[in-house]
Length: 412
Ligand code: PMP
Ligand code: GLU
Image 1 (cartoon, protein in one colour):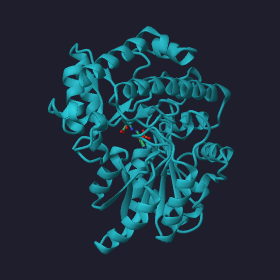
Image 2 (tube, protein in one colour):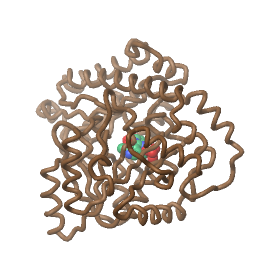
Image 3 (tube, helix red, strand yellow):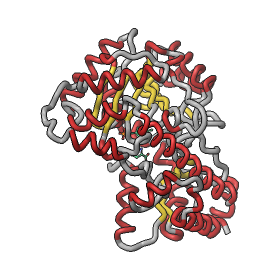
């Protein structure tokens, strides 16, 4: 089955191409232009046509090690592995780390789908009320005991800090508590930190602070640099318990599936991960824009009567229309799929139903991605990135207006 995020992107693009007016809140693509210096580095690397080492070039691994180290996580180049997107790395990790897979619920669409492709069971544990990306620590311990009684062998725990779909950042105490449970149960933590550069204020906690020898970090340039289509992902494998063995096994999987990240992309990665000033200021601008637009969209959903955690990182919201259930049920909307279908078919707003993220089909919840509102062209997107008041740009203001009308129509 086609992954729900990519499927809705293609559906919404096709509707737009056919002339429909559709507000695209369905896909987590960071819709921003490529900085000139980064484009120039890629252009200059176009003649690099050798495969190179499976783990990545020496210069890219060195740059990634420096990048982690400058963020407080001492890393050697031999702990780094590059891949065409962190999605491929997550698949390789789920295939490599022994045992079944523990997931926060809701969580990003591909973890459970990848585990199913590999033939592993998943153990879903609800997130705490205040923020997503980690399981509720108390429920985690009980769920692990119950899973074992049912014959499951939990081996990996995926944490998404900051989170997709909720757009929140788990509190450090929660991450610490969850790591303590993971340690007691001998789990390997797969810390998906792809949104770590996009925390609206402050920094996100990392499982590497609490369980350094059992935490593998995955990340990439898709979100912070809006380079999703360039497919640059990388992992940091720990020292300690099984670290070296894990690196060998991961490299083996990589060698049998993707051979290496495209060589010109490794040159781009080496440039970006050296933190040159223009890259850092591009990310600062992006972070500010994501925060401003996510906050404005959040205000629209809460004004319409939905419950919604305030956005803290990246460009997602996860509104819950439960307070409006009687009104929505009277219109035949009894779950997330009907909610998303009505928003799209009657109001021209594309969102993804919560069940794509493992949520219960009955929940009146959907994931809203706000990062495709910045403009249709590079010129508009560049203007949005540079603006002190992006909400006043006519195309962004018009989208917010469209959303307001849609939500008004949905709940009237
Ligand atoms: N993790 C999360 C939480 C994501 O939202 C995404 C979105 N693409 C990915 C991983 C994978 O990103 P990529 O393969 O582009 O690195
Ligand atoms: N991660 C993005 C999302 O959640 C899209 C890309 C993908 O799923 O691979 O919408």
